[in-house]
Image (cartoon, rainbow, N blue to C red; front, top):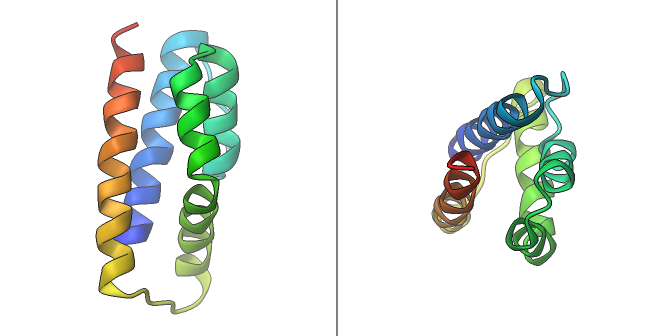
Length: 100
């Protein structure tokens, strides 16, 4: 359930940033699309590097969100802890964007 909540949090934060910058956001649950759109709109190299370095994690979170809605799925405690640490790092970068 942790992965689902992390993905949902990041999804909503990215939608917030896009709305703040351009007055709209894509009506999607795709974390990957939202992060790519945010990179394009803000043009921040640090966010692009974060995505590139962690592309697998973004896809894992998107998959976890979708699968949790349709089928039971569980993840190891270690994975959940890593994802929480990852989310904290992403949150710090996104909070810097929010100040712009």
